[in-house]
Length: 427
Image (cartoon, rainbow, N blue to C red; front, side, top):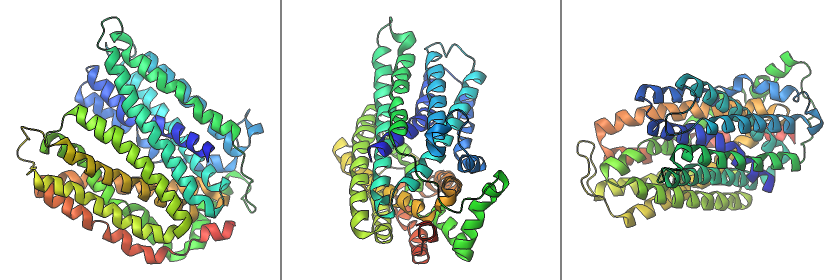
């Protein structure tokens, strides 16, 4: 379990760097909005990681095969992330970086590729090293590690950069030092990969690269049959309330309710991350006692109801798209809303990860899990795009009320998913 916390942390650092820290730094460094927009394209490897996942299922990394197939890929990806984070940190100063925009975009793309590869193998490792009864606890530990990375990367790095920028002597190196500290912290994941045990290869794995590419999809078709489409739809729709509501939370808090950046940082990033960790731990504990199917029902309902907290905020303080709030709503009203949203989010993430682990066959875990997360990313991207249009046409209160009802499609598919052929076949 400690190894899984370490791996969750190391997987969370590249995500936090590419999704939050680099866009913030680029804005401070004076990049144009068009150039900042290009950073979004650098995140594409996370959506298409299924394309090279079969390679990690098929063989180990030359020179590191003594570690085993899974751990050799983990260490190789972590080394790549460490080097790329170090190069990015060295080139982040208040003059916009010592490298040009194109070079920084290329480095970011390479970092995301290495981070996506680490995700592929870490997801497979987690599913293979655990027994089915441990899936809930394992998912809880991994999610906890990722949330810790969000706190360190999203809060601590920004605080270090902000404090060092206050002095003329340290301002040119504020971001370099902040990201450098984050870079050094990634050795935690490498230590976890080296200390952890290599899972035993599953019997019946395909021989030859072509066969190993085809096997994951063949096993899915054989195990699920026509219900494979239901599985893919479930992965896309189950977290729809979170995807819809989360995409519009920042505009609601900043524009609709007038909260300051500092208040959002302390409450949403700091306190919210702590509640998310607590939710993940509680989720893992309940999964061990209730089982995955029951928790998917309960946590799915809680996920929807948590959006009701923002609906009440928007309704109580009259948040509207047409008018920017002139005064801030009380922070005391924001704290319970963030507590409910992040606590429920931690629980539902834990159950969702545990279910996807149980749906994969150990003979092709990396490719099958990467395929499921690709469908999840498609659902998240589409709902995030639709949320802006919905708020513009409905306003905040009706939108968040509708986001509660968005849980119904995912919950309606649950009766079709009680049977998980991947775990039964492999165990």
